[in-house]
Length: 487
Ligand code: ADP
Image (cartoon, rainbow, N blue to C red; front, side):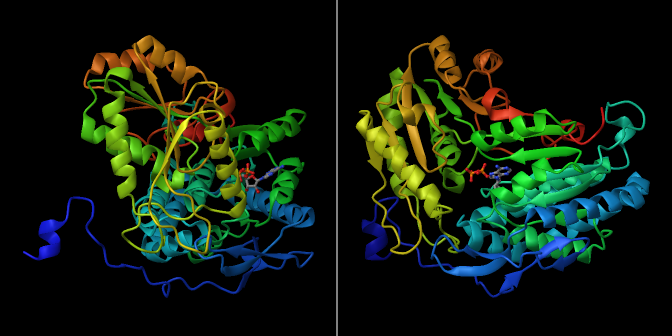
């Protein structure tokens, strides 16, 4: 046994770099808009660049869609709805969804690389979570397309028509899949707008739609910023808006849609609580809490960003947590050993910096990982705040970054009061050996999703969505169909 290995303590092993190759991702230097089954130039010829947040290098240039382009896309979706898609049988629609799912699987390596380059998330996560779950979503809804009569919405439920879908940058392909798969299964046509910092995987998906020979206009993909999203929301030819993003923009969209006949579903922010009782299975819990906040750099609307830990075990839990945080490997997202990648944009990094400064000013105790950070790109060391009070901004506002706020409680009642002391209501976790206690607590938590002895577990069969300022409507499962049916 080598000297190094003998003298090394657990956690200090060195890893050699294990970078994924970029060669599989054949990015074009520029992309047009995907309208009516073809890539076309935007009317204005405006383009903007999309960056690799880990290196700040330009990856490609994409089109900025104007309201004229939105109009073209909505008209194409309307035509496709009336002439083709609404006349297609469920079994036929199913076939297309299966094809799309299989093609995503076939090109999964390429998708994972593109997602990691454009978003900054570790390749391990895009490879093992984002891309397989995206394919799984299409597979799942392929299964529903010819069984809508049995979905619990009465006989022969009808689609809504043209769906305008606006998605965020944290899970670019997965959010596209969450939106497109149920909409198409239910018989709608779509205009999808990816986020401005992560358009590339949606454009790769457009290539797949061509490969799958999906009829022209059934899915249109418009890249652009918030103004493109706003034009889509305001367009009179859209029957439904589905939005995932920040609570502020969600609120704005709700106001704009209020005076129209459009249907709306919103999946917004969160301030999820992970509640740890003294009898929690310690090792699993630590891993779950770490995953709950540091998965995807904490760019997760349902992130477990508040840890509520029972006072009797609080010191021990904090000690173990900090040791584990220091072991997280932060750096090159393309390295297969990386745990925490780059922050998605300089704007998001600035927001995280600002909120964590408030944390210190308001008196919480900050622990940041001592990991080295790369010189170029947008980086934030995984951070834990202890001694956090409920009034602190880091306990109330969504940081959307790798920052955990730790609070304590003594009784289950106090844990519930503190967990519910938020305007949000997306997700919570409960960690306890006792099933009866977990159920008792879960029944009193005001959140759309409650995980027991696990966190951030996703499956296409399971509905996901929020209450209060986290939005309304469900995605996934049978419930996800309801958002796209006239029921
Ligand atoms: P974040 O703050 O996490 O970037 P946003 O809510 O700003 O989230 O963005 C989510 C999506 O909403 C993106 O695709 C963005 O371009 C779009 N968007 C931003 N502003 C508007 C708006 N006023 N109307 C419609 N869509 C918008």
